[in-house]
Length: 105
Image (cartoon, rainbow, N blue to C red; front, side, top):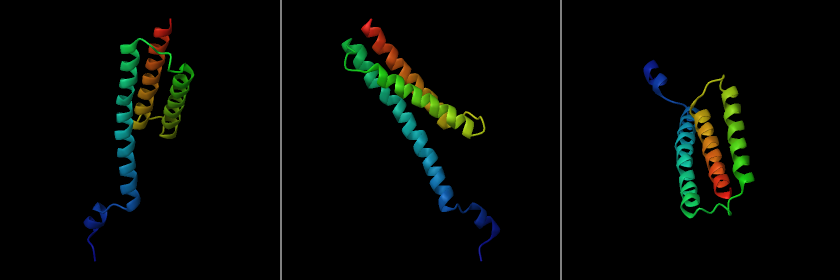
């Protein structure tokens, strides 16, 4: 028979899955933030934003903002890692849209 201490330290498959999922969201969300940089750099370096649709970037910004707000409400009005990542993605989409707009003026 296992001791109480052993039972407390053993994690269920669901707990392991949820922990792995949390790490995946954090890591991939962080990588996603960095993935905006090549687009920003390409637009800036070329000075040409004609191949980038503003509607796409504003739609993505709105979707990220809505997800951040939803997560904030679903997690007891706490700004956890997922909320922060979605908020940062919103900002990066808006920065991209601003850069596109600046080169069209």
